[in-house]
Image (cartoon, rainbow, N blue to C red; front, side):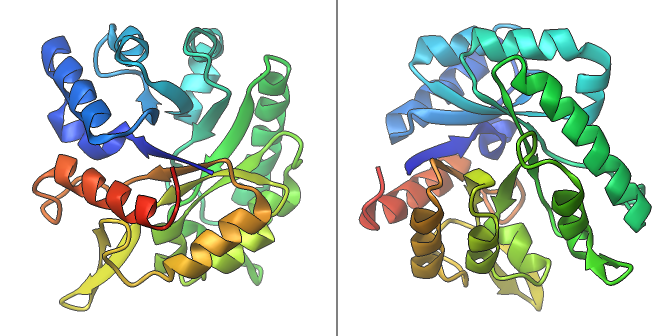
Amino acid sequence: MKIGMTLYTVSSRMGTPAICAETLKRVKQIGYTNVETGFPFPCPEFGAMMLDTGFTVVDLHVGLGEFQNRFDAVVATAHQLHCPRLTIPWMDPQTMNSALAWRTLAKELTSLGRRLKGEGIMLQYHNHHFEFARFDGKLGLDILYAESDPQYLKAQLDTHWVARGGGEPSAWIRAMKGRIEQIHFKDMVIQNTNPVFADVGSGNLNWPEILKACKEVGIQDCIVEEDPGDHMPDPFKSIENSLVFLKKQGLK
């Protein structure tokens, strides 16, 4: 299992091409070599910048609308970056309000994943916590994976959001065995009774058990993420803290 990070964590430090280039340089200096980012990019040159900086792009987060409207452009970008996976990062919770909505999405993502597999690319779904609402007695996330084809749709679990949704991250990792290749590592603390994002290893999640489960199921990439906000005044320090913690656990 290799350590990576999602550039969304440092998105507050993106802007002009010059600022983007400086941000990528700092991420590399901290010690990351594998990255995930969103598409479309913050500037047209961003793809080339990542490769020129020496990064391996392990995943792109791409909204469903981009696939629907610009499938060929998305696939071309993935091939240019030698990126083997594309991930649906978000669905509007207001539209995912019934079992039928989740079953419909499962069919759509199976079809999309089949098209992408023909291009040599694997499709994943990244969860938040709204997927843990129940419909007809079943979690939305359970419906999605039960009704979709595991050949064409993999899980990209997020440890923080699983926990915030009421799940146990290690149990979900084990439940997705054979269907999970990447995971988002994000911690959680409670401040004034509210759950808050935290550097990996600094919060309340059971990291020894999470790491054990990841090894058991053969996860290839653990991707450090911390959503931007007031809790994280210096994203570069936060990703460094997470990297230091994971290296102490024996990861590289």
